[in-house]
Amino acid sequence: MKLYFAPMTCSLSPHIVLRELNIAFELVRVDNRTKQTADGLNFLDINPKGYVAALVLDNGNVLTEGPAIVQYLADLVPGNALAPANGTWERVRLQEWLNFITSEIHSGCTPLFNADIPESIKAIFKQKLFKRFDYLTGSLRQQDYLMGTFGLADSYLFTVLKWLPFFDMDIQEWPVLAAFMARIEARPSVRAAIAAERAHY
Image (tube, rainbow, N blue to C red; front, side):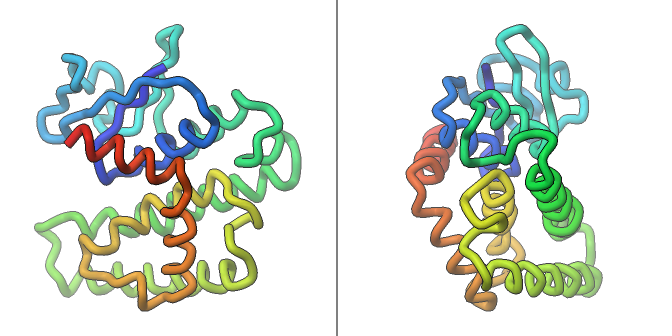
């Protein structure tokens, strides 16, 4: 299978998961400006939405949207520690966390990348994010990972919190989150994924 990615985007999350699960894959960079892929394709032909991540299976099927991709990958390796089994209450809790990260953290960051939005408006988005960070702090003060042990939601949260320096936001203002980030970044899979993406710069 192939994972189409762009550096410092949400595609880092499925990239980490692939390495955690030891699934063989090819990493293919996408130029976000031109929509050309490193293997010579028009990315819009792969994912008409125009953004990463996209997972292309060996049979040609394409899966997009990070939370869907990571759950699909986890289900390829039954009994892994990254995701509870389908149909369980714990799996629903995982989906709850993935949806929260998507809608409140990931989407909350999106306007901050837009250079056309005035700083006064961005300040409103940041205040909303700060409230979400306080909620996350409350959860992670009780345990090292969102669901007790490292899993899919942690890889996704780590990925989007990596963007904070772009917005002049210092994770150290939330010490519990800073400790969470340090724990995740120390994982071999995470170090390997970041190094591989840097190699494609």
